[in-house]
Structures are given as structure tokens and as C-alpha cells.
Length: 153
Ligand code: FE
Image (cartoon, rainbow, N blue to C red; front, top):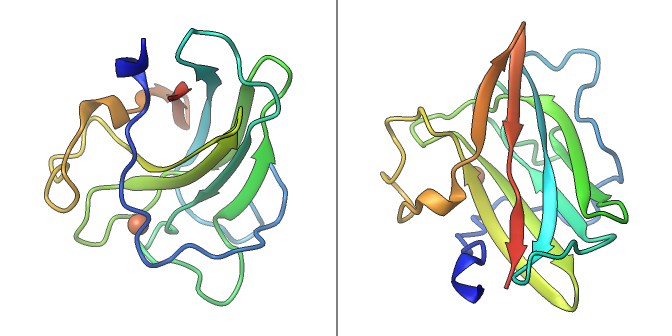
């Protein structure tokens, strides 16, 4: 159903082109609560979008973007079943709701949006809140496991 399409949300001012291709942002010296974000990229008919390109960026634990390099920035390609996995940390917030930016391209379509954390009381204080952008987040031992399925409409 086209109404199931993942809504767009603001790109914000801090996207950087030419991010490295990688499935992990966890570098030596990156502090924070480990988080594994995974899910699928689907079309509105429920079929997988193979090899979709996902470009993620978010703040570090202190809520800062890396303007000089590519800390907490990177792109990857979903597999043939539309599956992706990103190993990272829970981003810091500053005064904003915690969020993960993503640019997604596949199936001849493109989407720029933000993923949100369900427990964050600040949700909606900046960008209009849409619950379709909430990840499913669970504790996973020492970290978090987050799930989000994108629907490219
Ligand atoms: Fe942001």
C-alpha cells in the first residue's frame, strides 16, 4: 500500500558527501552505547528492494557531528533480499531528540529521512513527529538492538 511508504524528514545541515562504504561506525575511540541497527528495504508491494544504497549519518555520544571527517558517517548497500545491518552507537542528542539521518536510493526512488527512538521524550520538539519513523529498539546485553524496515514509495 503506498500509504505504508516511509515518510521523508528533514535532511538538516550536516550531511557530507562521499562517505566511506562500511557497515560499522565502531572505530577505536568511539565511545557510547553499542547499537546494531538492522532491517530491510522494501517496495510498497512488500517485495525487497535489492542492493538499495543507504547513507547514514548521526552524532557521536556527545551529540556532535563530525564536520572534518567521517566519524559516524558511512554508506552501504542492502543485499539481494533488501537486508542491511549497521553497527554503531546510540547517538547523543544535544537538545534534540536522538535521531539517525539516512539517505536511501533504490528501485529508481530516493528518500531522505530520520529514524527516531521510541523512548525519547523530546520527539516532536523540532521536526514534525511521525510515528512511522520510530525504530523498534530493545536492550541487548550491553547495548541496543534496533530494527527499521524502510518502504520506498
Ligand atoms: Fe541531525
